[in-house]
Image 1 (cartoon, rainbow, N blue to C red):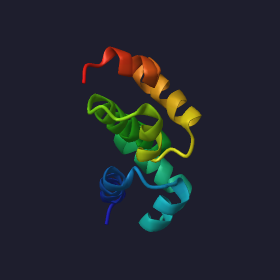
Image 2: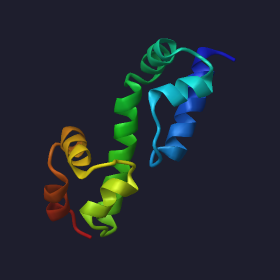
Image 3: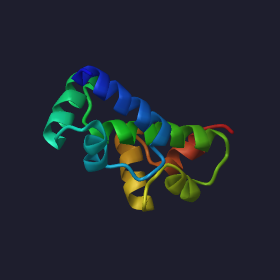
Amino acid sequence: YTNEQMVLDCINYVDKHFTEPLNLTSLSHMAAVSESTFCSCFKKLTGYTFQAYMNQQRIKYATSLIKKGYKITAISSFCGYNDFSTFSRNFKKIVGISPREYCKNTPI
């Protein structure tokens, strides 16, 4: 079981469970490695930190929900965020505009 396979297994898990509460501690424990080993292997393989990858997946999902006509306030919790301000800040950081602006500019 290589470090690369461990990271690929974790990516697969994150891709299926990113709407749930996930954190570095639980993933590194699941992979049976230290948090620092997990972080360095994850970043080496993906080019992202674990948290940045999670946020990318969540925001990608959020944009698909916006395109389907879901309300922005509901989308943040659907994507695994505990509060709207964190969701909005991460959305703007990744997409470049706020969720509300994205919603206005996206035909449903």
